[in-house]
Length: 260
Image (spheres, rainbow, N blue to C red):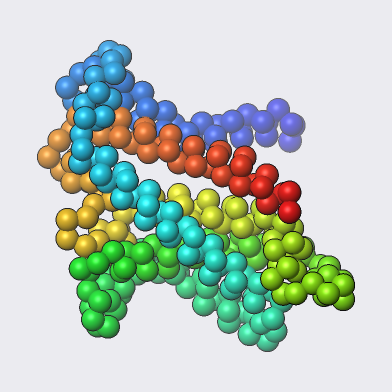
């Protein structure tokens, strides 16, 4: 098959994946009173309405800080688990891998129900944000583990041994030798964790405390009674925030780790 055929095929795949985003963004500029596509005219009317909607802004802030906390916790635990899996697990390597991937084996709704039973059984309940954080960490942890494990597979243990022979302690060996070399996996896993946590619905719906709403939940509640382009405007901002986090993290955090 020719190179042209593969190029066209790839372009069609990209178009298929990006089409929903393009439709939502264009629909957000609809000047009509209802969410329709193609737009009935172009206007920033619904962005103005959205920017004055405190309920949506509160939901966005909640989603951002929960995603940030989840990313930090998942990145730390996932990186530690990946290091143990690749370098120290030995005969238990496959067992550790299956255990870390277990949250992906069940549908998200079953995981959410199981977590709901668990938090009430141990007496935590859903009165605080802790169950929600636990659920988000559980669902994002496998993605950090996968990315960091992939980076560690090409890591040569002799580099650590050489640093140890020169007097470097465990923390120095990790911070100055290992972390810069596995940074693509760590950053990639952290980005996956943030994006998934920001957008996850079922876990948040089951484990949220009373009066708390993340952005996906708020959008769901809004669309049950309203079908205006304001929902598309909110979704467009969500896409923009996700892309902004990816670009900023890759540019600044990636370069910072590279300078170690």
